[in-house]
Amino acid sequence: MGLFKKNTNNRNKINQYFKEKGFKYKVKSNDINEIYNECLNGNDGNEIIKLELFIEYVSENNIKVNINEKDEYGVYPLLLACDQNNIEIVKLLIDYANKIGIKLELNEKDEDGVCLLSCACVTDNIELVQLLIDYANKNGITLELNTLSKKGNYPLFCACGNDNIEIVKLLIDYANNNGITLELNAVSKNGNYPLLLVIKNHKNVKMMKLLMDYSNEKKIILNLKENDLGRISEIPEEMIEILNQNEGTIKVTYAQNSELLKRIKMIEKRKNELKMKEKEENFERIQLEQQRNEREKAERERLEKEKIERERLEKEQEERKRIEREIKQIEEEKRKLQEEKERYEKERIERERLEKEQEERKRIERERLEKEKEERERIERERLEKEQEERERIEREKKQIEEEKRKLQEEKERYEKERIERERLEKEKEERERIERERLEKEKEERERIEREKKQLEDQKTGLSEQTMFNSSSIKGTVEQVSLVII
Image (cartoon, one colour):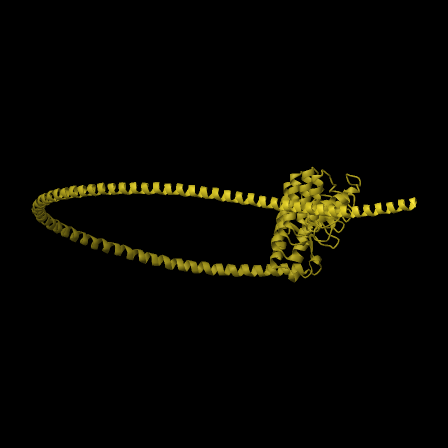
């Protein structure tokens, strides 16, 4: 049941909220939980938008919705979202649950016994499975990994059925972290089980090794029936070898006249033949290696003797060369001493010559410096004179510029006075024109008034004339009547 009773206002308010948000959709229900399911279950492709707006509305209005409520089939919103592989809605539900402080149900099942994690594994969505595991860890919820549905499905079975090794690894890691031993031998109604799906349907060697490693770690005996495997010839040889090498881990129920055993024996026979061939090749290789080593040893001894002889000859030759070098060195030293003596004498003569040249250069340099000094002094005097003249010229130009500025300022002031005078004259002209216009208008109005009065007077005169005539007629009639009476 919902946490709130029906309110006929809910539908209108939510429809108005959707409209304000620019979303053209109208809910049909009045109950807040029914509206929630309506937003979640639509098949128009707008479920995420509807649910987002709905959650915004209930959050803004502090309304709690029972997001764990089941329908008549035992389906609840989070299960439906996982079944539809809609990770966005799952995230919205998790965010809303966190906001209002409600824990989502992760282990509830529908009427077919299907749980949330199985739905997520069926969708083959690694991100969704990880999201549910993370939520369970954060909220202290232990996921039920081994509960079977009515069809015999459970999370690991679904992951193996989809050949998704990453989800299988997630489930194994979660089980290890929470002290859970995964069920590996449960059989579905269709007669399938994880190891069979891995070998028969997907032929996934890595997945098979993963299940083998887990079963060895947990000391679980895996069951396998040969009759379930179908065509034995289609099973990869590597898988057959794994079955043969792990007899203690996998309990195989062989068929009569077993093809699997025949293949195992054939593989073993071929492996034995290969081993024998490898041994023979190794023996031949060892013999060849020994012969090669003996030849190499003899060759090394010969080379060693040659090397010793060569070194002796080289030493003798080096000794002779050393003696010759020493003789040459002594002769060279004598020659160098003689050359050094001659060089020293030449240097002495050269030094004397250089000293004389240096004295001469110094004298010439002194004379040159004196001349340069005189020339610099002359140039400096000329420069100072020119600078003085230039300063005087600049001063004159500066005065001239200031005079021009003053004239410009006077011109500007004169122009400003003229402008002010023009503006004053224009204003006076405009004022006179305005006064003239007003006078003319008054005269015109006065003439019109006089005309009206004149007309009124004429009208009055006309009226008086008519009245006078009327009065005369009346008097005349009265006189006639009086005359008649007298007569």
